[in-house]
Image (tube, rainbow, N blue to C red; front, top):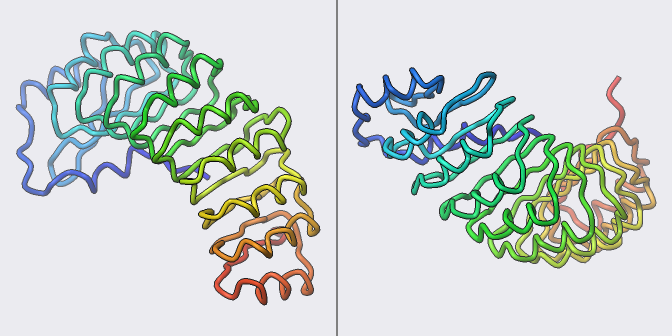
Length: 269
């Protein structure tokens, strides 16, 4: 599951918005920042593969139409995040393969309008996750290649608006304990556990998540027995467990219990 979140922000910019000053945009580009445009308006920025000064990134706060920023393979990410956190309009942030530390994560709590956060392959300490959880405005959190513990998952309960949680390719320590804490976040409607060690016992817990509408189990350890435990989740609208063949009896059982459920399964040949 890859959302590439910075693309979403284009829909958030009014068509009538006035393009930013040309000189400012030239300064931003000269700082090594790529501006992405929608109908002639700069709506997001991509930063990476070279050193970018915090001063250059700080210019983005003066470009009011930019609501999404993506970082990849960027050195000095902590200072850059610190500069960017002053942007009052930042709604979407993507960080991939960057050496972000607790100091950088601490700056994230200053992004008061941040709604979508994607972090790929970063070391997130208990202190760092508490900084992420401080963003009460977050509705989408996608983590990939991260180590997730029960204490980590417990911090998610501090995000009252969190609706979509992705833990694809994460190393989960004590799956059942993690699932129990995730299940306490009543606002979650979409959960992706693709390519994790999530197993059948986790499905007993998932079935109790009353607001869950979609669950992605591709590449997990969940078997047919685990899938059958979801029969009681009558609010569920999407179940994806690609990589596992489900028998006709299991499919029939699921559909009889929940006629509106869409099921994606099977091994691609």
